[in-house]
Image (tube, rainbow over all chains, first blue to last red):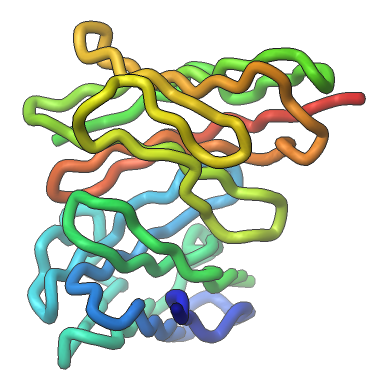
Length: 112
Length: 110
């Protein structure tokens, strides 16, 4: 069974630039999650999709972060403009609501 | 909304010693509970989960956890650790969304 795919694996940008991350969940998983994991901390949920609808985006900084899952499969997470404090690993996970989540390898973002 | 508290940020132990990583949660609704492990430079992997039924849950690599509803705890245990268990361990609670604790760094020394 193919796992959750994410790209790119690493990204280095300067502050105020824009960046986008892509996630392809496990086939058939209706729920997709984006997490931000800052070094030394636990993952923080940014947004949760159920199919192509948003279930929870209460912790998403909406002034600079956006995410979409237009066809209920792949998802993109965008940051525009990036700040130094956005340096983190961005994790995508998929699964069934309330059940186990399968995590991708993550994208490590460094903002200089 | 639910929250998770991992009571120890770092736990150093010697090889073959027992270990307990503590996790407390708060929630106004019934929840599912999870422990994930993150080895250095790797992604999150599920160790074990509690959904319902027996409160003692066995996971991979010899780990187990006990759900205690009255104490709102889900502590992780292993009777004898190995060097290879050195990793970051995250407790998580889920109802409609999932919240993670800050993590406990387990360091196993020879």
